[in-house]
Image (cartoon, rainbow, N blue to C red):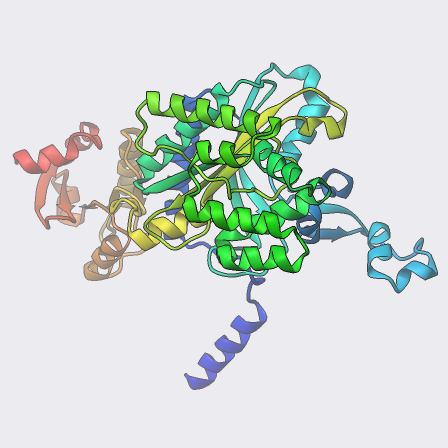
Length: 467
């Protein structure tokens, strides 16, 4: 036995999965499907249609859309065949020079850039504003840690082809509706890239804007003190650092204070948009009202307007949802003038939050409704017919494959959370009867087999209650 255990452990080491990826058991998969089903239902209630795009994109589509840090996290796919044949000698010893010759494709980093590529190439087929949702995996060559994976699902909604702030309000309502149903207590943060641009303009760091927002975006990972220290180490003006210290000390939700400190056109435009969104959100009496947070940056380069981020209040975790407006993302693919706005729900982090807070429904994970037991003297054709009829009536049914001891079969039914077991041995077969057992109560009743034509998932519990 010790030899077998050592062999198993060695085999497990050899066939392990890559770091930052996960297997999902049937129980975990059902829980994830529960999250996806709520997202799909909510998205469709708000008029969104499904879309799917390939797992890989040409690197020419992906590079330059996520900032310098994002480009470093792209998983590149090696060209097939003898890809070194056409590589110049001088490029073979330089990593950066070599890459364009050996990799032309990469795994998608998010779902937004593939969406922009799709809209630009299919614009003549689409009706605008185009509203789509997409639930698919993405890949990032990031350092794995709690709540951060290299392969994970994003669940996105986007509207392309309108500048209306009504869409921002609608997105906040969708965020509210989703997390109400999932029973996660959240904080919705909102900011505006024009406000950040106005701050950069005021302190004369326009040429460092994207680097500035990248550092600011690290706030939830490293905290204010380290963000300020990194800005100082990077040579940003002391006046900017003092402004950030002063503003955060006075509270980050004061729009009026921001206008007192910095009143230029970009800040004014951003503040006006934020005020409209906050007011309309209050008018519809949401459970989770958005709050202004000027430190929110969303480091991706393509955002140009309102940006959102959602945090779970009761768990120490990074953002579980985020997004924003991008004025001309399709323009980089030749389709100009199509503003869009969207958000992404982080399914992996939402799952982790719900698991930690025990928010999944108790009866969610079960293999079926009825397990039909098998005896040595069972008539297989009769069991198959009963299973067929019960499935027609709406039950999820399984026949235990072998006539093992009843205790073992019942233990199987209990472990996989079947609600009922159905038994028909030799004596019952002779008398055209069946025995049904409720696994929750242990109550066991005998019926004529004709009752199966009348049983449905809606009335089976009342049959036990009324008998």
